[in-house]
Image (spheres, rainbow, N blue to C red):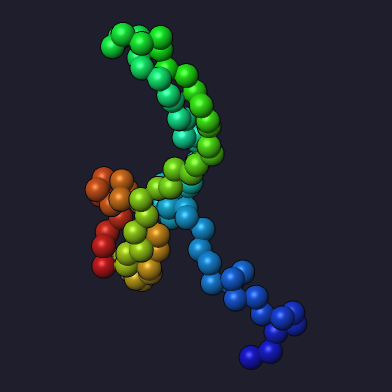
Length: 90
């Protein structure tokens, strides 16, 4: 097989972390580090010392799904969709 451009393995083999049914995708958030003793336990209160970016990734599973037209296909589906019965396992 000949390619017009040099074949980039990473570009063609990676899959996005997106649920095929619900469309859930990674969202960004923060890790907030606090230091100090809380006022409730006798201190002067906690203070934020650093904030670091993080990602919340959906719990995706690669399962075989039976499509409405009868074919079987592997796809990334979130566990929430599987538990809710939105997909029929093959």
